[in-house]
Image (tube, rainbow, N blue to C red; front, side, top):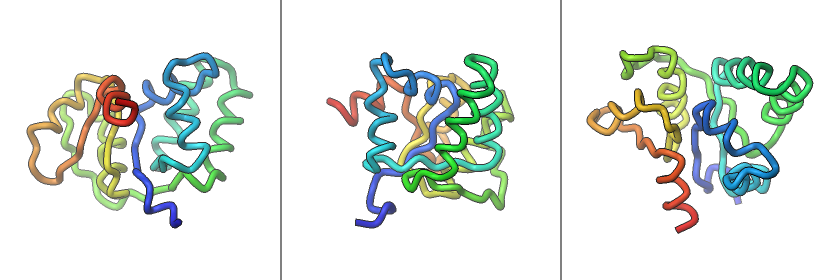
Length: 141
């Protein structure tokens, strides 16, 4: 099967942090990416934010190892952003995740950040936003 046959997702940084720990109750999501059952879509901007936050929350070695993994794993698609939609005005930094989801034609953008709620009311371009509990319910329930 082609990797485009699987569910494409974009993960806000807070979600990535929540799923990578070996003892996390959400680790199964990261394991699904590793196994190729979920496809993680990222952009350069997203990778840079992942690295910055991981360095802050862990250390540079852990951050570099994860970023290196994400850049070479076949279930991670690097997405180039050619247009900025600017759909989130409350925290414009969040738009990098929205633009990636649109450009990659991702099935879901997963975030617990309240700024993303505005996407539920935008008809075009449509971005399906799920919180982590909603994602868990959909894929585990």
